[in-house]
Image (cartoon, rainbow, N blue to C red; front, side, top):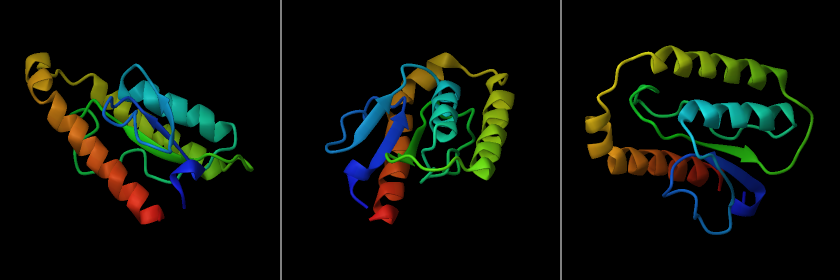
Length: 126
């Protein structure tokens, strides 16, 4: 699969300039990214990477990148259900108190982790 055949929805600034990829940059938190993914899935795009990939808890990493097909087909109801579950997981973790100073210090690390997860997902599609 070519990068031109995928849509990447992300809030990660180091992902938004991937060459030859259709990027939908969300200027917001990971919950807003997942809502954008949910809207795209409801519109007929297909999910190509898991929205909660990686071993870091959703509430610990503020960055999220999700790969979808750029083409539109029939809506997959099981994917919509799975995405709603992922949103509940993220929303349940939002109440956790996070030391914003620590997050800011590790911001670049979280961006790199999210980018590596995205690179692995894209590589598996090739």
